[in-house]
Image (cartoon, helix red, strand yellow):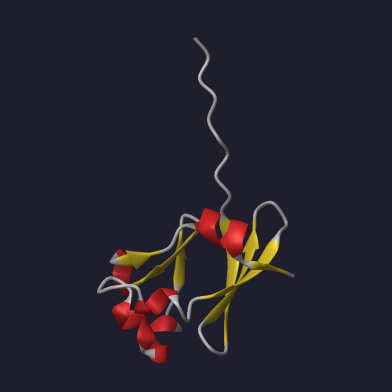
Amino acid sequence: MKLFKKKVPKITNIEVHENFVLRCTFNTGDIRDYDFSNIINLGEAFKPLQDEKIFSSVSLVDGVPTWLDGKVDFDPCCILESGAKI
C-alpha cells in the first residue's frame, strides 16, 4: 500500500507589522498577512502575545511561527488559508 503525505506548507520568512500582524512568505511562493489581534485574546495560551515585545519576538521553527521558546506556536495552514493575500 502506498501512503500519500499531504505536503505541509512551511513559512520561510516572517515579518512583524503593526497591530499584531505577521507577514508570512511560504515555500509555495504565497505571501499572507495574518492579523493576530483576535487570536491573542483566545485563552491563556496566547495571552502572553498581547505584550508587543513578546509578539515581536516570533521566530520560525521548522516553518512554524513560534514564541516563548516553543511554548506557543501557530499553524501555518491557518495563516495560508485565512490570511490576507499579498
